[in-house]
Image (tube, rainbow over all chains, first blue to last red; front, side):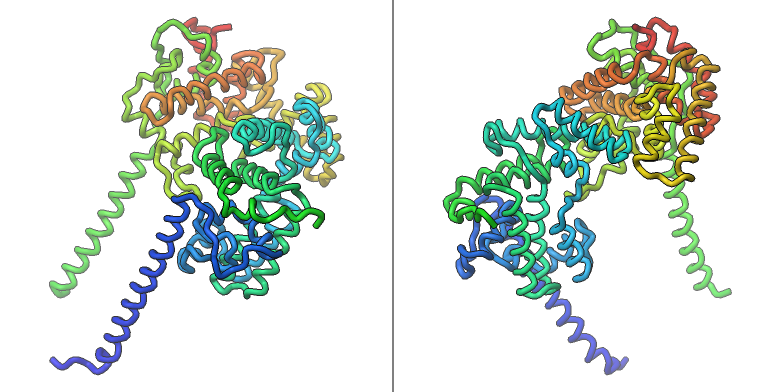
Length: 279
Length: 277
């Protein structure tokens, strides 16, 4: 039987596609392994070819929690530890972001004045002296706005959760002895820095756009908090309120570990860069 | 018809038949068990620490055929595991991917009895909202409290009318519960929270038994659930009424018939945690 001509054309194409796929997967696995090794070593990684000082570097340091957890260089504008395929899959599965437009939308929502937890936002805004006074202030302010009674119940429960976490944060050095958390916005700003990093890596936004997003995230964070540790506590609370089940399990452990590394590792931007006051 | 076609059709038929059998057997395994009508007792000395929690979980335990007067479950582990797997199914996936079954069970119990325990969600949220307005203003001023809140929340007229209608349905359901002897003459349901806590306690007991929930953590859940029950509910009758009110609201005839047959004995049998002061 004679082999048709089109087989001679198609077969090499299929083989080339197969090889390209293997190469891409290999590259992706190598990058992931590098990121994983870095995050397992739990040391702050920096890209030597990128600036470690200046406005952009300072704004990138706002996303240091996430970059440390993922083994990404804290000062890299483009993710250097994860392949584009892995980032694409993460964005799709965990963020439901499938396109450049959705990424920009997501970035804008991370840079607005509301976090994904409006109840916690409200509770932190009306904070008052004692725990009982705080609960009463929350109830009064919420009732005045016609908030449903069931939601007021959730709000007072959130007051208790925040108080519980703050106690634990103080005991573990995440907060100073008399420290309180002002806002959860750090969690959104930190994620915005990384979202810009991923968007640039996927070429869904340009380098200039990524820089603009990062600078915006930094500027917004610097206006709310008073120090890197203050920012870290805000980020930690945002993350544990969202994912942890108040039993200080794996979510809390990863946050605490990252905080300790970022406040002690000599290569940490939180030690090498001054907090940009008065922005 | 050629032989080749017959073989092809037979193969397709076999594949379809296998898929149908598989689906049927999966449905059979997932079917809710028939509710048990006679309560089972371990007849051990009651533990004061957990009696309120056991009272909360009594209805769910009777229904599943579990003893209701001891923390330690007595059913076969296989039956408990099947029940836990079904309950934890919606908790299997998280941002971390597919979770281990014990983690999913932990999340499920935590959702029912953890920090969000005082939050009523889903289809009961509207009724709970209205009941909390009655709690705030008292039964006499219930409709007035609803109007006041609706005005502050600037709700449209039709929505307010719907709220009053639901409030009337709640009052009617409570009247039916009183008629069946499941709620005292001058009692009202203070909250629907016990509707979630009951299954929560029952699942926590099962999870402790099969080792899918750390014993200390599980017992903490039970203690906390007991404390919350004492805080929200003045009598065991109100706990039971809260767990049954949704069935009366939706006209779930099967559950109502089962409850009217089973519950009165739970309130009088000295072995029952619901009969203890």
